[in-house]
Length: 252
Image (cartoon, rainbow, N blue to C red; front, side, top):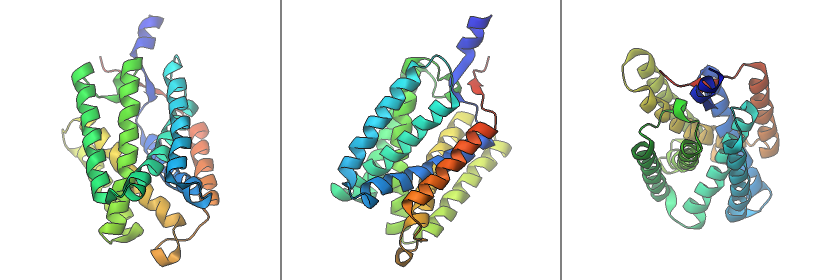
């Protein structure tokens, strides 16, 4: 019975309101933290990407090697995906000259391809099934693409579309509210709605992060990237330790 119970438990957390709160905080931290390394420290997007890629790969290896769900380890890995996603998207959009539209299109294609291959290989992309190493690999690769896409999409909306960081936050916040309404009042696949919400939290975090630390002349609040990142990290840690976290359970 104990073995059967362990097999039913996912290596990712149960999706609750607290999950989404921490996810948005983590994506915002990814933006301010990534910018702190690449811009405030003047290391550049390429070096910043290399640093965070090493942290991301290390976190994923530890996460997959773990025998059961660990909230702290899981959220460290999520934060690693948001920071590497920030610097990677900025490197592609700005240093390589792809532009926000090109970067968004490329990353959306990679994200959809990852979900497609995952589904064709394992038969499901539901997060409650993420317990075996192969499923975890697909999960983290998909998340990395979604985090990178979110940065490019957030910048495209705020800058190219010209609606600003506050306007971008309203747009993505509204889209998340629509997804939440669909969850409660429609029969749309819960798996589809989860990934839609998961993807949308990243551009929301990106524009909120930019709103916090960009200069006032660019529509931001000009807060220190270091202090903003520290405050977000404190909030994440508080949510992890104050609220209970349980692993998602597979449906019978």
